[in-house]
Length: 274
Image (cartoon, rainbow, N blue to C red; front, side, top):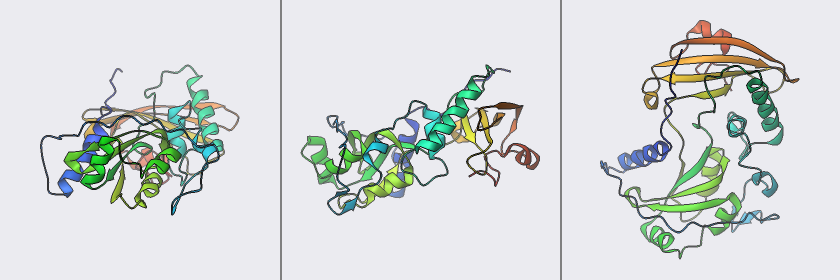
């Protein structure tokens, strides 16, 4: 069986989010006239940084934030799903990375190579006034420097068509928590994480509880995956804490999975998924 990956292109999440903002504001346009990018800003992470930026309480700890991005991106994404952590914590990441390494070490052909980035984010869209966007474009705005230094922003670009500024992080964050971190700033009217939408190749940790034996489902989609994929092929593995891997086989068919498949593999639309 041969099939190609159908994940959305890397620009798709940002374009989709920007389009939704246009619709919400009644400014539907078929052309997004983005402003020119401001010069990239390279912010060094304070080793013993402040706990506040003015009145805004900073989230996380500098040592933990500095660990992102992790060597295994898929393990880092899975570590963030179903948690309330701003970045992946060590215990969760280390176990998932070891599990995925054990699965890859079996030598079996895997139908998916990476986790789909529909949760973790590296980009925020900040709704800001035009004078602020102009100052950012001209390099004369510094009111976000404290937050940007702490959270590791390495570039920012005004998007005039949606009245927003796109900021890009060097790290992977929990989308809701990084939104909250910027939403409290006086110049930010709204913060929205940019994430991949639709469907595509994915790796999922589908066990109800973390710890013990973990079940991973590798999924590969076919046919119009930005809209949800017509067919999905699934391949599952159980991994014990000692790294023992049990392959559970390969299945294929339309989505969503049947009730019978849910009781066996606990896939995306089943109630046991964390």
